[in-house]
Image 1 (cartoon, helix red, strand yellow):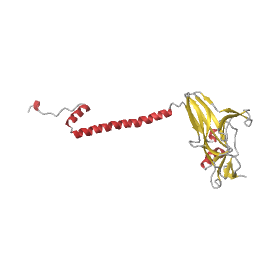
Image 2: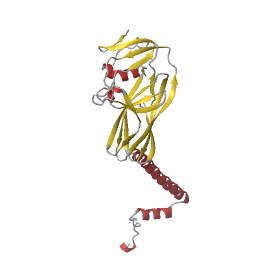
Image 3: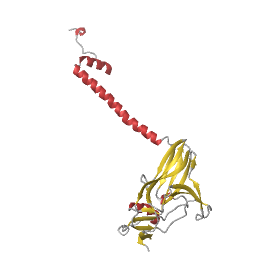
Image 4: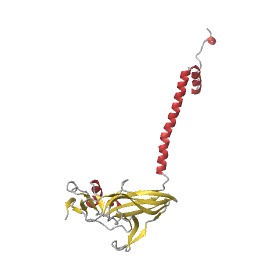
Amino acid sequence: MSAASRRHPPPVPSNRRERFKRWWGRARPGEQLAAVVAMVVSVFGVIGALIAVLIPMAINSAKDSGSGYTIRVFTNPADAQFGRNYVTGLDYIFPAGTLATISGAPEKDCDGAYEWAHKNGGVDVGNTVAAFIIAAQSKTVIVDTGRIVIDRVVPMPRAVDLLSCAEGGPIADQILTIDLDERKAELTSPKDPNDPSSKTAAYPFSLLIEPGKADRIYMAASTSKSYVEWHLELVMEVAGKPVTRRIDNNGQPFATAPMQELASTPYIWSDGKIKRGS
């Protein structure tokens, strides 16, 4: 047999499209249907994968950019110390009998009081002190007012343990004073800056923060009537658009009890220990 008359295998298609055409021509109808289904599933699988990747990217991008400002809250008074202006020495109440059964004490005395007291069921009594910083990054931030929201009124216990700390320091030169009974917030400052105990002057709470600048607000909330859980809402404008931001205790309401006549058992911090007071 001459070379010219020999049968040679068909040439191998040079690309996937040609190979697919040759296979499609030989395939049975059932095989063709299975191939179509597989391709459809494959396409939708790719689309699903892209959606799974792109949507979170878009959400994260929107979360990370576009706000133009940040707010950082300091709920621990020890963390809210700005230079010489700070407040420690807060008082806390506990269910009666609690402090007689708890072992240990804050490692840093008064500076460690807040976290220790709250971890062991304590509640701020008299005042709740905190601070927050508003930083305008790329947009002008205007705070029009602060709105006090009472989340819950809690019945006062008949008997409590009262834990006090003898240390303290001068209050900030300007402070956001919150009256939980009247649901009012206003800026107050001593008329004599060199005498923090002098009579205070009050101003409406409003701020204008230009891009690239920040403002630190030190706040103290008090009640004389009710044990309340509450939070502060900042009514703001960011680049001309209305915005409301919540200031709270790490996602939970602040809790403040009144300093009033209580059937209380007094305790104090002294030399790194909790001792029965008088």
